[in-house]
Image (cartoon, rainbow over all chains, first blue to last red; front, side, top):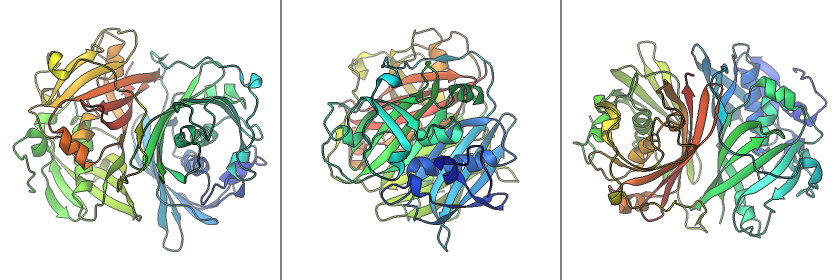
Length: 271
Length: 271
């Protein structure tokens, strides 16, 4: 088992693994990040992200990461496979898969890009909404008594679940529980912490499941380190609910207008 | 060579291929859709999309498609490989790669989902901006005398290239030249037709290249067929230019408020 710097945190426990070959690791699903019928999608993405970052060939920082969820991951062991598909001068292209069962069927697949960040003309055009600081927003009561919802603190500014908010714009301060310094794996996981948009329009619960999530990373290691374990402002907006799937796009902001990531996802809903 | 219904259209010519095995095709780059140092990214995405749709195992319509561009595709022959990674009851997960050269190095990789559309509660939340109909907007002069820019007609409503527009919001009617009935391949290609955001903020030309593009499809075959060969309204907005890469998210609309697709991409820029 490899040890991580904050090995006592449930998030780091969920990333623990046994190295089988340079490109294969064995993991075990985490009860701390369990969701209805599968691990929380954010922890699955984080596990795949970290597997890539731990490869010794890895260069630069994550730039783009897209994960498709193929099937529920059953409780128990699973395999993470990383493939460095191509290395260019300043970026790397990866493919990452999660396999499970005796037949090693694929249950998640991701493609990702790492790149060296360059000091060139830069400009954040998106605007962070003006909201009260996290400390002034009361934490929302946990939506569930166990599983991954216990692992995040949500301070909802706009967009309450299970009512028709008129639109699906949401603004919430989100943080790991207990607090944990931000890194690329936890940022990846946080990108899946958005409330499913359908629950911002409809009062009743319906079965849902993320089928695809994409992240573009706009910050390097220095900004993540400077951020520490403070909450992130997660802002998102749905675009369309169409014939069984809806999507949103969103932003993750620091307290100081740092845009850490833009993200988008597509979610299956039953009815 | 397989024949397509409109085989005389340059787009369909660009999709022509030789079947090597059930999962491999040989293509040749198209001069009609050539860009600076590689084919137009939209045609590359369309070729991969069509290769998936032509597989006899294929079920449903495209739901999500993400392509990462790994390296320029050199003029000449290349191979498209499709893998049906998993088939569930109502959706399919695919992986698609383009290989080139004697060593068959990977130059593009995509992951995609096809699904059966279901008649359930649906709602488009994004708003189509109120703009004049395409016929009332003059076509923009071609930005280049040859290559893929000749294959699209742009009627720019907002966001002129090579000036500082104050923001990177763009609205343009876009159509195939000559007109061609919309299908999933051409819709995929149109998702890459957005003006690179940096040219909406800065007057000078700088080298750029898309590194990742994602599409969520919100319309089924019936809506595409109903649309015919009319222009689509392409709307997009940049989010951040950070250390050598910028992103945008966008929408493709029909004339009648039909949301065909939402899309996002990440683009490398030199300085």
